[in-house]
Image (cartoon, rainbow, N blue to C red; front, side, top):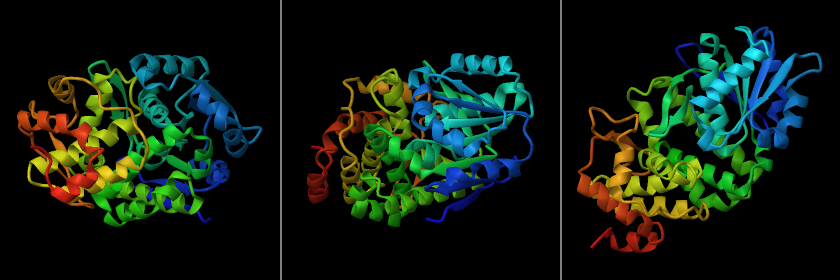
Length: 379
């Protein structure tokens, strides 16, 4: 199947996202087009490198190409400033200089950490992404967001730092564990909700094919998500307005992750719960119709089982939300969708509404049919 080349505009210049099955074979030539580098510094995790390292090395690095592989733990609990320091010290000991190219090979954690390292080390060295998870391929590798977590919240330390190149080889998803793949579908569903009603309908009609990792289904879904992300971040690189819509479900989702110490959910699983909560919040605020809420909940159910909503008091989750990057002057901001294919940012919701939504969310995820029939969310 022919690869797609999608262009992304950034303040540092335009970069290409190459997307397709087997596209990794073209990576060495694409790197050569970027210029000469003193050395390639690969940042990845042990488990990712065991799964795809042989294929990446064979495709990307001719025998004479100087390169060094640096391994680190890509658990969400290790996505912190300490890991950034560890990697910067590894780069120093490896002789990395300003003419080095950092290549992030892995999922969202690898990309976020490696991107922040690239932005920080020697005040900035060239960066390339080779995403290996569905979340990274459709979302986190595009747009230049990098960063790490603090105990107080997710992604609170970081930088906007555009890569020079992104290579998305959908064949790399073949080794992805089932739970990781299903988790990534939350971000795919998100794009349908916020920007493309046709994509959402396609998912409703073809979810089983996507879950089977059908080549033709992925060849449509993944590039379409990349195109949406590229369009949004090209228009609003620094998240000053439009880009906020990409956070649909993330205000709730990030709170769930931080409140459970990043040990209960994969990122997409937390976002899946967050999208249900955001849809319900839209309904409570008179923005989202009951049938739209039901469609979102129904499609998320078809992703497969996700860890249950935690037994945590709403006030604790609300406190976690207040560390969200979209908060302005102590006011929470949420991304809401009036109808499938559209979204916008909204100002703070009343606390009692948030608490009601959090009590209702774990019940509604299993009651989409009743919701669609009655239009009732509570009482």
